[in-house]
Amino acid sequence: MTDLVERLVPDELWVLFRRVVPPTEVIRPQGGGRRRAGDRETLAAIIFVATSGCTWRQLPPVFGPSWQTVYRRFAQWSRARVWARLHRVILDELGARGELDWSRCSIDSVSMRVAKGPLTGPNPTDRGKPGSKIHLITDRNGLPLSLGISGANMHDSLGLQPLVRGIPPIRSRRGPRRRRPAKLHGDKGYDYDHLRRWLRNRGIRHRIARKGIESSTRLGRHRWVVERTVSWLAGCRRLHRRYERKAEHFLAFVGIAAALICHRRLTK
Image (cartoon, rainbow, N blue to C red; front, side, top):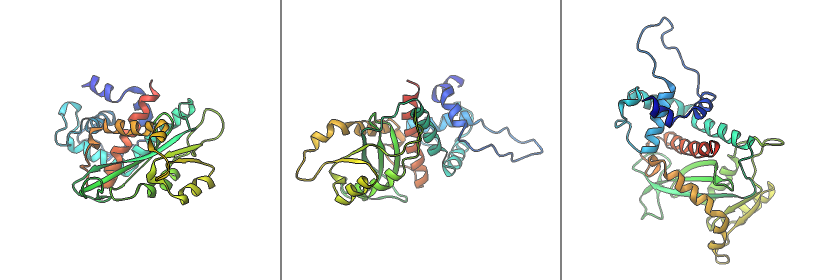
């Protein structure tokens, strides 16, 4: 069991996680009762659920804590935005090492089916079946910088401004923190003049394909990295289909997947 936990939560990831996890609450100051399950074992179990796609009830008992404990801890950490903070801490480490390339960032989205829950809508690309959508911005290397979720019927263009605003101030190897890309690439779903003006006013050059004028194949020379990141997100099997009824839990799994993608680059 120790080897499995160390493989899912290596020492480097565990050190970063301890910086963002809320302090443990002592429920019984007088002592007694059952010993609290370890955070590292619980985190390993959560990552196992995210990467394998199994349900909470199918969680193997080898991790130690029961599936009810793991789910309860997952819900607590999701409410505390631990996964977003972990993602930001890893981005800070990447930025301090000069691993982030802000010269050409890309924006895109991906839809998936969902049974029920908030932030869902009829998917126009899937015969109107209920679905949700993941929006993301990546750097030139495909590392996710900003994430968001919405109903599948939300137009991609509506996610550009919130995503750009959602890029956190990230450390740089030299100079102040940075949060604006030099250039942003997007497909024809973002072909609107007001979005181009909005980007220019913030000092961000745009490279957005124009409907009926440009071929999307030329844009793919630089925008393919975000498509690759979408496939990396699919490596988190829990995201193949949205099973979470609560939107914050769905966003939590998206944040876990993004943190794991960035951590892999950190340990290269």
